[in-house]
Image (cartoon, rainbow, N blue to C red):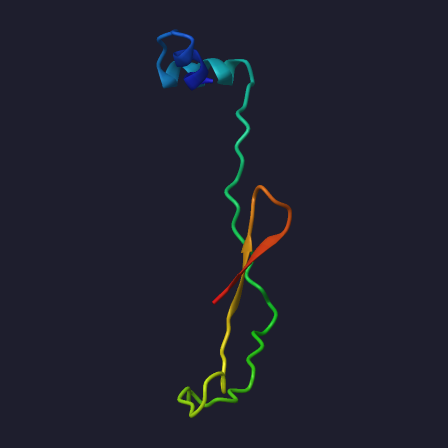
Length: 83
């Protein structure tokens, strides 16, 4: 409310706006910040088949990849990032 009045050129203090809103029983709508819930599911770890041994004797003998899911706002769903 205070910012709207300032944009319209009305010079009024924040305290005055708060008093007027209290007298008129007006309350602002506050949107809470999104805080993701911590998962109660246990993290599933897979067996380490390479045992950190990445050296090979031939090309394309071993390959390692990681996929990350990135939530998007504009598109419904997620975007996948592979590295």
